[in-house]
Image (cartoon, rainbow, N blue to C red; front, side, top):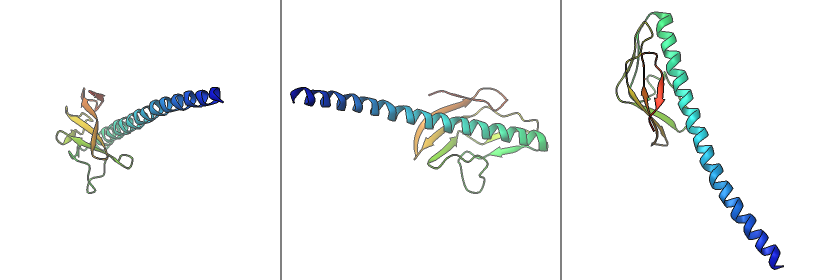
Length: 121
């Protein structure tokens, strides 16, 4: 009987540790998904500007009037200023924050004129 209780206690402790780690891993997957989705849509804007030979300006905050980059529910972005994509498909340097339910989850920075972002934290 005592052995059964000890086994159950050990199994409960192991399950608690695994669940904590799994929750953190799921949060990281959601963050990476939001980052790649943001990056893909900014790259699409670059291609669109080049194809149409017309500059595009992405506003600093995600809003309903200009839904050019739309992330999954609960996720938004905030830019340090407007992202200007030239008619040649070149982006200016800018910083971006990815937010989930209003909390900053990642800080990004464009690294070249190709509208490519890297994660700072």
